[in-house]
Length: 98
Image (cartoon, rainbow, N blue to C red):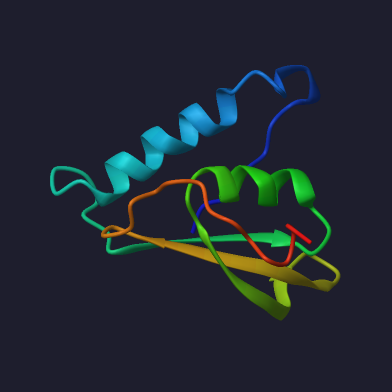
């Protein structure tokens, strides 16, 4: 699973997508983790994280009810995935592109 956290002062510089691309490349590489799928989740409403996942080529898959656990509560989350065989081009997410 891949998640994003970035200090406000580091935002809007392309650092997150550059770092995430490197992690994805390594994760799918036979010399790396050799994964077949990576999953992204974010609390419903975290549009900045969703836009980053969209730009990285993740496919939006829906909402996972109570899919994120915090110490004292659970929240619904958006979920998206990317496969090693995907082309990783940014794609349209109907949930956000209306």
